[in-house]
Image 1 (cartoon, one colour):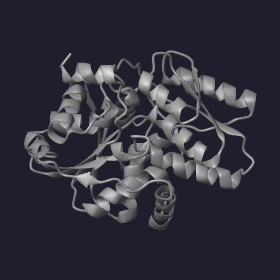
Image 2 (tube, rainbow, N blue to C red):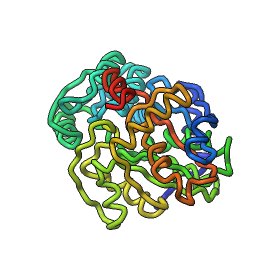
Image 3 (cartoon, one colour):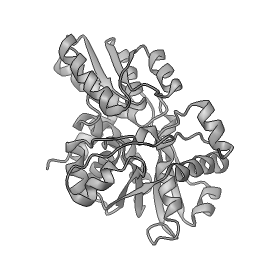
Image 4 (cartoon, rainbow, N blue to C red):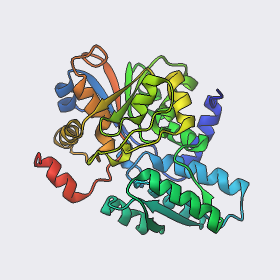
Length: 322
C-alpha cells in the first residue's frame, strides 16, 4: 500500500494554509482532571467550516481543478461537514457544488451548505441512499462525483495531524472518530510520515458499528445505523480503501453510545467552553469510557474536537441531559 511521503503531506498542507490558518491544540486542566490523563485537544472546530474536513476539500479541489480546469461542477453525498468543505473549496474556484443529504439531516448544517453557495438535494433515509442518488445524478448531469474518501482528502486532513504530532510528538495514543475514514487515515499517514509510534484507536458509534465489525472480521461488514446524536459517524457501508489502511495500521477500533457522546459534549462545553457536535466529541467519549484503561489513565493522549456543527435545539437538549 502506498503512503504519501512527508514532503507530499507538507505540499498538501501548504495548499491548506493558502485557504486557512493552522488550528490550535490545547490541554485543558478540568478536562484532564476528569480523564485522569493529560489530553491535548486538536481544535478542528476552529476551521472556516467548523470541521476538520475543510482541509481535505481545499486539497481535493485544488488538485481536481489542475487536472480538469474546465470542470463545470462537483457533486457529493454528505451529512454536512464533507459538503461544507466541498462548498467552501468550490466557491474559491468559482464552480458549482451540488450536495445530496438524507431526509431529516441537520437543519443547521443544511443551512450552512446553502450559505456557502451549494445546491442542496434531499434524498433517501440515510447516507448510503443519498450516496447512491448522488452517483446517479453525477452520471446523468455530467458532474464530478466526490466520494467521502480519496487520497487527496486524506492528504489534506493529515495537515491537522501533522500540526498536533509536531507540537506534541510524545503523545502515546490518539482517539479518532470514524465516519467514512478520512480522519483516521489522515492520522495514520501523518504518524507514518513522521516515523512515530503513537497508538491510533478508531472510534465508532455503537449505533453505527460497521467499521468496528469490519475491523474485527478483517473484511467489509455493513450494519444498520440508529445513532441520533453522532450523525457524522452514521456509516452503513464502509469505504473499501479506508478499510485497507485501517486494517493494516490502526491499533484498535472501539465504540461509544449516544449517551457517551452526550456526556462528552457536555464535558467539552463545561471544561473548555467549546461547542462539539456528536461526531466531534466521539474521541473524548471513548477516552471517558476507557478512563481506567492503561491506554488512558496517566497517559498523554490526543483528541480531535473534529467538528462543532450541531443544531442548537439538539445541543440544548444535550446540555439539559435529555
